[in-house]
Image (tube, rainbow, N blue to C red; front, side, top):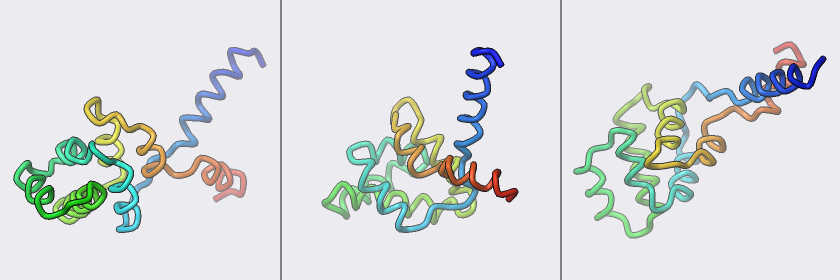
Length: 123
């Protein structure tokens, strides 16, 4: 196997190991993400189609930024229902105005080692 083949295989394996989760985030995850998104909570909210009116309501109702982020995310999940997916959240986190690929990887992807373990064990 050439080094070019190995590099291609490595890239394919990396792409495969980072699979987006298919369910909807739970409250604990939203609370943790709300804490970590910090000052970009409004930008994330806009990418998730939360209205500016609702963002203003949340901003006025909560003092701590982490609570603002959490309540924005809870509102998003409640309003979007089954469309409030990890895929939508990942896309919003990766948007050029949010630029939080790190949080997309942390919250929206199935852990790569877990996927590899499933493959090796035959599902």
